[in-house]
Image 1: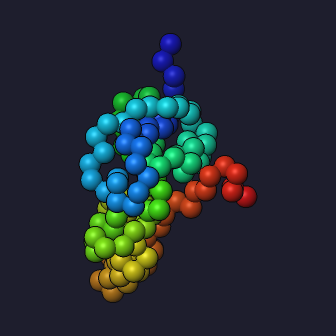
Image 2: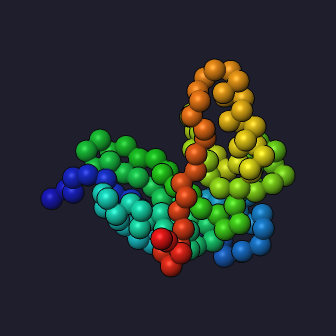
Length: 133
């Protein structure tokens, strides 16, 4: 029988290197370590934050569609805009990308100035389970 709802698969990068920048390129070798269903997605995100480089893929059992719902790199990912600083994965209005604080603020101000939105870019504040409040 096929499950109905959403499956959240946690994938970990096989590169064990924890040095800054080790995961800035294309980490092409991933393996699934855990699955969560429906409203347990936050547990998948929390697990990902405990790993050096992990992502959570969301799969709709009804449509078969999937996408990366969350990604974590210890110390932050390389900023997609300035390529000099690090920051969390930011959910923009049109895509998700790693942005440092300065570039995130610049993006928010530009969007508001252009009148496209007054909604700021956001990131999922997810903490390892032992730090969760």
